[in-house]
Length: 213
Image 1 (cartoon, helix red, strand yellow):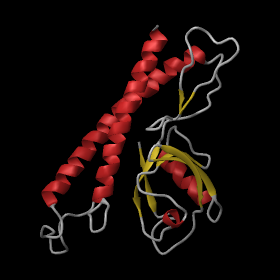
Image 2 (cartoon, rainbow, N blue to C red; image 1 turned 90 degrees about the vertical axis):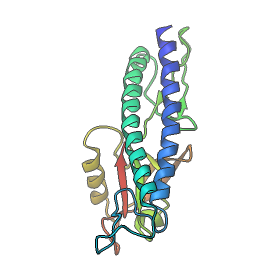
Image 3 (cartoon, helix red, strand yellow; image 1 turned 30 degrees about the vertical axis):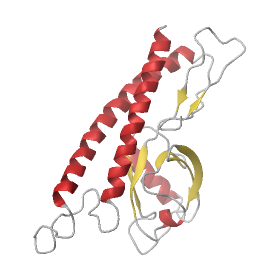
Image 4 (tube, rainbow, N blue to C red; image 1 turned 60 degrees about the vertical axis):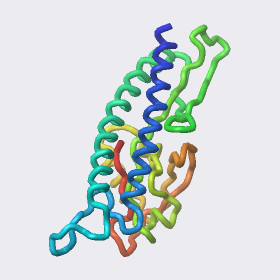
């Protein structure tokens, strides 16, 4: 019963997080659209005056909302991870940790054995660890198919864990000129693609920014 209740709670939290991620993606797309200031771009011109080509109050409101959503997203993700640790410990002897996700933020894979217990099948969840929140036109990332809002499940050998930013940079640097396989979530669907880090006229080897979730 405890496992069943925990499963229901985790799935409810996952659905809530999916709604938050959709809202965050919409805000990011709005801020990073043509002529937009981006997530942290200046709201003043070169002379220090407020930019007249953008709605500054609306942008400040969007940025404040995005910051609040990020904090809530972090809290919910931590709660989901704690719940999953409990669920995994219950089924560790019978279920290999194969990842998956549902149509929103987690792809679920239901696995059973010939000696499955009355507890039923529990979801094994892979959680995205980063999201593309900035991407430059004509960059390697854009040319290879990455899009704003893509959530990263796997980048080469990098999956969720510690020191993600430095591991992502190292993975790109060590594979310069060579394709890196990726697993992403785009609009609720899991996709496989590859990107090749390479020099171009802009910054970095990919021309995009991974926001750690």
